Length: 299
Image 1: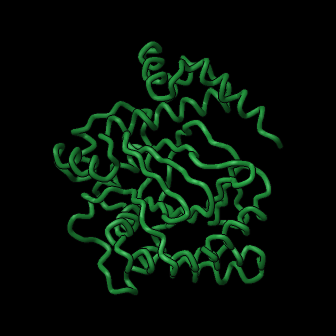
Image 2: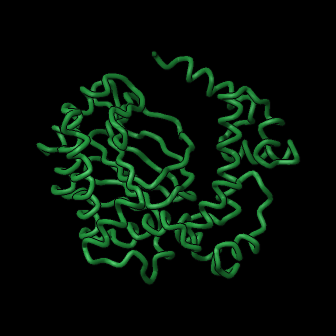
């Protein structure tokens, strides 16, 4: 409890207001003083540790809840929905996110004498909530402390990140860490399919052609892709398209027809139906609500 209280105090001081902060490359801090509606986005490979409050994440309809007793580990880019479910002005939600890149993970795996590839890699869900052990928490706290010492941070934070990856490895997250290493080496498996969809989400999707592209059978791609992401390739593509369409309307001022066409929809009615199904409101109403909520955020 002492370490988690220290982490909460550090994050509260370093944020000061609601929002996301990047005090140093590779370290992300988050603060939210009220409950939130679901937010849709793409989570990259990362470790998230909550110091105060609680958050719920939905992946393919399956809920994952993480709080100060747990951590969230993501090993591949995944379209998810998240909402803060425990926060108040007196006890805001406080979280630190640490990206886990393929080069770092691969290096630690090799030094630990662990194979980067391995049986069953594609059958492991690319997201997990685990128990936050004291040793792992201690390494995270040391990273946040170092933000007060920029002179030493760039030298010492990479060392603490190596320790974090090692702690996750010996804590039983080896399969997910290997997924991160595989994604960086662009091997022709599920990671390759995810990367292809991220780069070409606005193009027509032929599952057979995608399977051939990544060196798998069509049935094998469906099975392993859903085991990792909780979504079929078509569902994964749809979520990427709709999230990008929403961004285009909110940030670039496109109308629904223009945004839908930009992300690959030929039929505006089809786009509007799928948009409403995902975000709970038609495009125009949802975008108006989003803009109003952004206008209410204090600068």
